[in-house]
Image (cartoon, rainbow, N blue to C red; front, side):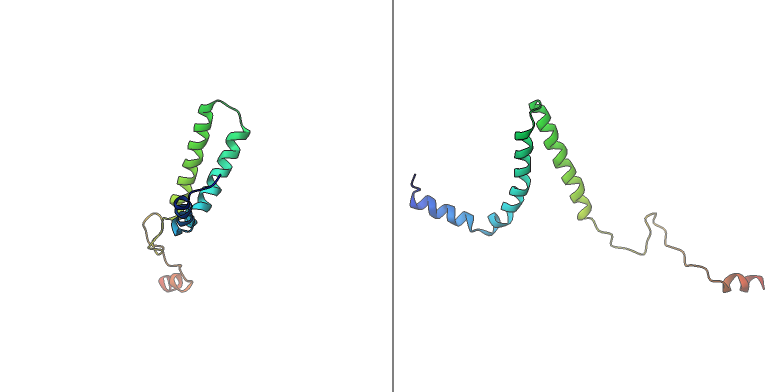
Length: 96
């Protein structure tokens, strides 16, 4: 089967584009395991949708933690500033 010249040039342009080169590994790493999972299991078709939905949800929940940042490290999680550690000289100065 021969591919027409204009189609061949169009395919080469797409395959050499930066967008394709960046997205192709993602699609391979995502769709190959999904296809293997779907071809090796034989449950009800609704089970496939449930499995796919749960997988996408777990990816989304884990990625949201990667992109969050804590800009102020001096404030603890409860919103209060951490207390300075007490030295031995403070109680001695108060008592005597």
